[in-house]
Structure formats: C-alpha cells, structure tokens
Amino acid sequence: MASKLQLPVDESVLLRVTHSNLKSFSADVRFSLEMAVESVKEKLWKKCGTSVDSMSLGLYDDTGTKVSDLSDNRRPLGFYSPHDGYRLHIIDLDPSSVTSGGWLEDTSLVEKYKISDEAYDKMDGTVKKFKEKLASQNPSGHESKVAENYMEDLCANIKVGDRCEVEPGEKRGVVKFVGKAETLFPGFWVGVQYDEPLGKHDGMVKGKRYFDCPPLHGVMVRPDKVKVGDFPERDPFEEDEI
Image (cartoon, rainbow, N blue to C red; front, top):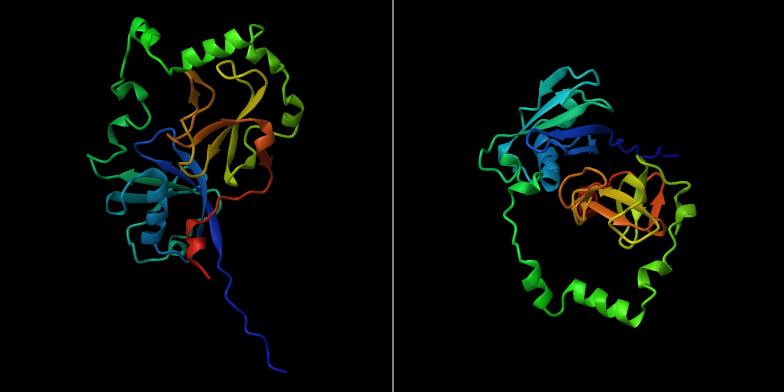
C-alpha cells in the first residue's frame, strides 16, 4: 500500500504590532513563518498606511529586549525566530507619510467647518429639524420608548478584551467597551475595535471618548449584533489561496 503524501504544516506566530507614529495603534496579528518579510510589510501596510518602501521592522521579545531588525525583505519571517507574544514594531521612515505629524490620531489638527447657531436654525433638512418634527408628532418623546436597561441582559457574557464578530458583515475585532453611552440612545452598547478600517471613528462618539483605537477602526453597536468567541484575525492573503 502506497504511503500517503505528507504535506508540510504552515506554522504561524501571533505578534503584537506597534507603530512609531501611531501611539494608539496596537494589534495582535498572526503571520505565517513562511511569509517573506516583504509580504509581512504588505500585510501591515493595509493596516496602518505606512508604505512598504518606507517601513522598517524591529522584533522585540516579551521582556521588551530587541531581538533583531527584519532587514532582508527576501528572507522568511521564521528566519528571525519570532515567538508568540513577541512585538513587531513598525518604524515609518518617510517624513511626509500620512502617519506623520499625529494628524491621524489628533483630530484637533484637522480644520473644522463651523456654522453659527442662527444660520443652522434657518437651514432645512437638518437633524435638529427632524428631531423637532418627531417631538411634535409624539410629545411624550420618541427616546423615552427605549428603557435605560435595554439589552442589559445580552451584555452578561460580553466583556472588554473578548474577540468578537459583528453583524452584518461578519466583521471581526475586539470588545473595547460595554455599558451605557450617554451621548447615544438609552440602553446598553458595545464598543468594538475592528481588525480592519471598517469602522466609523476612533472610539470617540459625539464628543465623548468611550475607548481608544486607530482611526476608522471603532464602532458602537447594540449587544445583539455582537457574538463573542474564538474569532482570530482573518489573513487577507487567504482569499487569494485555492
């Protein structure tokens, strides 16, 4: 009887990724040890915005000691002997990079459009006018229909730090907030940091910060949209495999 062909096992490692310009950026990412360093950089470029040509990578062990620089783009990641829990630090070498200057994290650096209260009140089709119309149709207030403990029971098994999947779209991430949100409707909310930039904010909603995460990675959703469990970060390269 002919022996079965034994296929090689594609070993992987889970690394904590940080960035020199994005102080709030921190993510646990799984990499194949067979990936070339250049492929690692391409994967990280999609997450942080630093181009492959401008990216330098340093590997640190779990005590914070530098192990090595990933200086050869052609070598596989496994050549540098990373282990689960090690940190992969991105250094952006481009002074004109989109990540430089802190504008991706500091919204105070973005010029804001301002309008006077008087001019806003004269405009039609605004959120304020819409709410006033609802209030006139239902003087008791439409927000009062939502109880203060709305969906509290669904939060019993959801805690900060849990990996999760959010519907619709099966978007994956990590739970960053659970509780009431004073700037949103009554009831309980769950704040999630997506693995990919599929969110709406950086953890600040309507002037209130509920958690910290990279820009466009944060979202606040109702607990019934969140499923916690073993949801590892997806590898974007899996879609190209057959």
